[in-house]
Length: 112
Image (cartoon, rainbow, N blue to C red; front, side, top):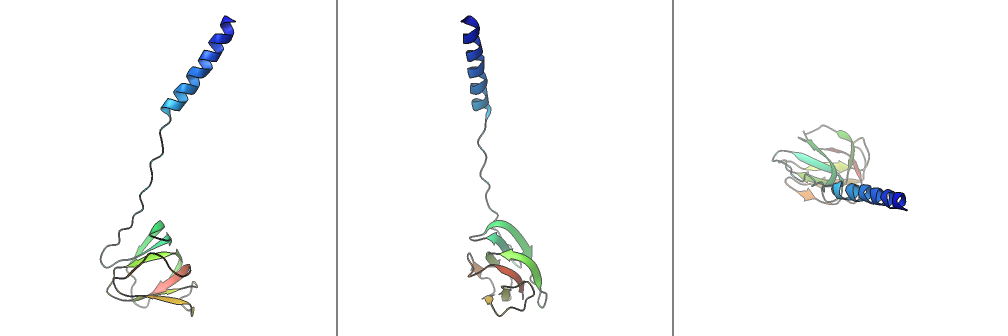
């Protein structure tokens, strides 16, 4: 009987130690900043997910993106395309200094 109590108490002590030493995970805060002169896009709506930054240079097709929200902090408009070659007829035009937390569809390329 004494051996059985000891085993139970050791097991309870190990469980208590494991519970006390566990620390809660810290929530990650999304980087929603976008400096002047930058075009910023996020993989999630409302500036969540992975963030990419470019200068959105005129005439350059930026492709390979999966974009669901944008901040255009440049001085020029940027055209967002549904396909990955900057040629789709499905476009969204984002004016200079315009922010769009949600887009009507996922964007796969853009150019200024």
